[in-house]
Length: 92
Image (cartoon, rainbow, N blue to C red):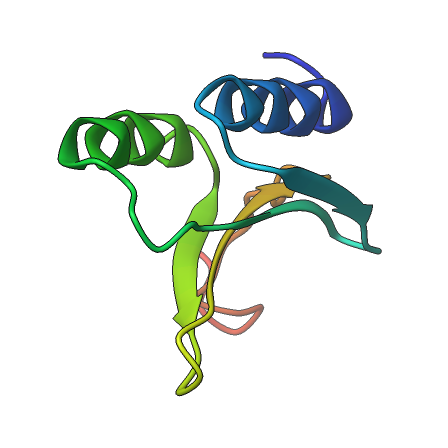
């Protein structure tokens, strides 16, 4: 699996190739990719954008009352540790 920063940069590059202007922001636990969505984005491009976003750990669309739309995606920096979620008093 590629490093999170490489994955985030690859997602940003793919969104840029679809004509979106992207920004990549590093956070403590994840790297985020944001892109402003133009008002007229063809349906085929939306399908391609969703295929790209599906590669992220989470994604969404922020729409404002003024008509602005921003896509966002997040790639986690660390893989969650596996542990016994039942707690110490419930050992097998």
